[in-house]
Length: 454
Ligand code: F0G
Picture 1 (cartoon, rainbow, N blue to C red):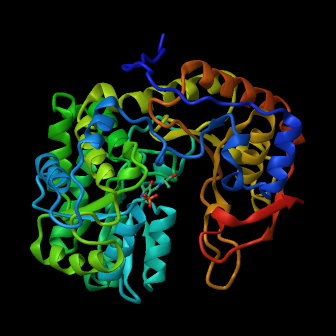
Picture 2: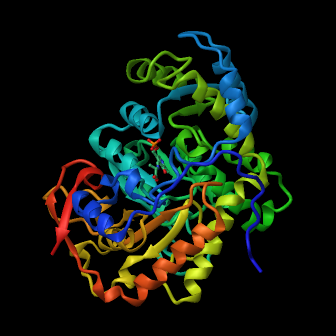
Picture 3: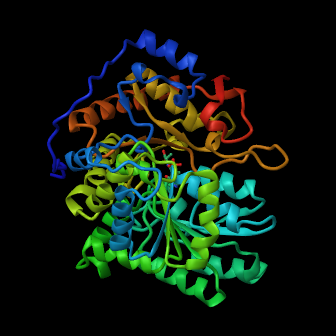
């Protein structure tokens, strides 16, 4: 069968508790039905995110012990810079404390009021930074990308015709840059193909527009290109990475997906871009040889990037996710297909089809699943969207409950436990009711907002 094999062994463990359901009921009430506000001590399996919680390797830990501390000119920083050059073939690197810090810097530099940033799909923090600078996000995902069930291998692709039409309509001078998000997060960790990126780059070149790659979820996307793109099946992961990098004017990433607690960075071959962004890095992040990271994290990132070139490492997340999705599908439970990276995504619009979108089905499902299992997922639906300018609700294209599988963290029996509880919840889904806000922050409301049953 398709039982994934762990290509690692566990040598350090962290004790978990599964608190009784009475406590879980109190906990989710205290958290205002927002899983972001739960405390770890009340959680059995934390499937909120893969960010900052992937397992680290023995090699990463070893490198951290050897780090070279200094404000300026540390050898650790030089090691990271060299690793970036080697892997992406990019001359310039700017460190930042995490992914959204890169987004802040890039948006401040290039997004002016009235400009547009076309992208395959938005990410929450990306959109927040672009709109903060007066820009507008245009999502040009292929139609297939928003179909919750599909067997299309690259649902993260950008629709190149839509891109051409958008440029024709507004003129290239209005476009701040084009952004491709690799491993497209909010539609279920769906990959784009290398071929699609080539086509997008061709259009960008025709009009002199920069192509910016958000590479935060690169590891998963690399794996899918290797597995699903016929033309790339004989390429090494390293070669695929280079091919992607050669098409990008700027690559930025969150290093929190590499097992690190913090970190990120911006890479480019363009000296002008580098000079422009450099000033903002020292202003917001720190000196150029640490950028808001600890030296130990810088060492761990360098090793993490190297490990991302290992197919037997990057296959772990996608294989576990595929397994979990398959098991749920066997019980008729609606999940996003094909399985992507990052996590298993339940389609709340179908799971709780008796809850209207105005009552946040994905949020309601997240809260209910925690209650019946101690598993914490993340709402990726309307709660995660920003309201429209006029204050009206902006309904998300999809209502998903994301169950992230941090890489190399959970065992298959823990995945089976989650499947068993989700199955119970599906059989009893009519018990779940909708939610409404009692406290609603203006910016990134999903982080701190509190809700109660309608
Ligand atoms: N871009 C993408 C595609 C991401 O997935 C994330 C983070 C960021 C940017 C921002 O990076 O957190 O280091 O500031 N995704 C996490 C998640 C938070 O849970 O999906 P950050």
